[in-house]
Length: 64
Image (tube, rainbow, N blue to C red; front, side):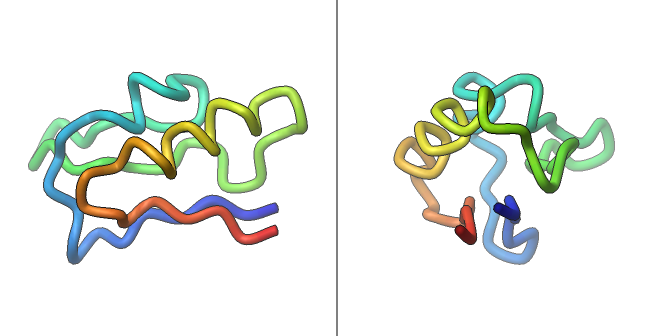
């Protein structure tokens, strides 16, 4: 499973970081979301799925 954030459409709301802080962070430069763990282990997937659902810009994806 691979996690991605579309940087061109991210609005920097930080919902992904709140949902899965071990997988996502926000850039110090522009505040946009970044993926820390592109292929998270199974125990982090519930948080990643929550991040996908929470993202107001719908730019977080999980390819299964």
